[in-house]
Length: 51
Image 1 (cartoon, rainbow, N blue to C red):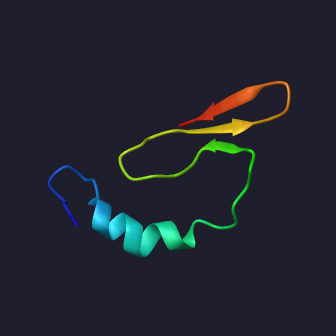
Image 2 (image 1 turned 90 degrees about the vertical axis):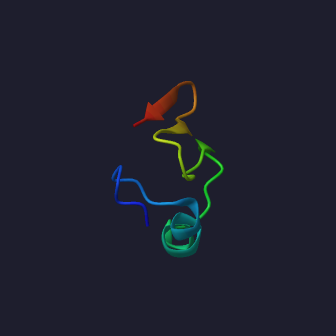
C-alpha cells in the first residue's frame, strides 16, 4: 500500500477491495476501478455521475 499520497496501489485494490464490491449491476456504466475517482449509473432517462 502506498501511503505517501494516501492512495492504495492497484495490486491491493484488486486483491482486497474489488472482490468485496457487491453484486454486478448492468445499470452501473463506469464501475469501481483502481485510479478512477468517479462512477456513472444509468437511471433510465438520465445518467448520474457519482464522485
